[in-house]
Length: 42
Image (cartoon, rainbow, N blue to C red):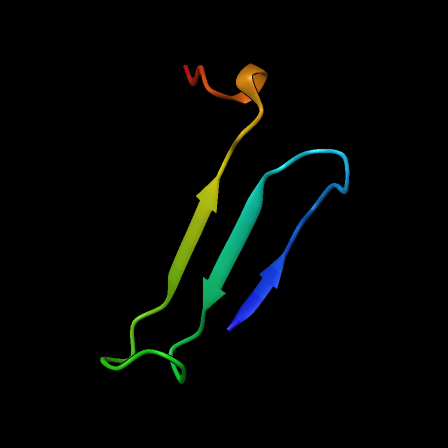
């Protein structure tokens, strides 16, 4: 599992799971955005 925080001044975090790291061979991307400015998506 690889985790990386893109900007040390924000609290956004991504988690990437490759096909060799998952039980069923799927790839997954998870991300949270704690910055209020990033909440609204259009």
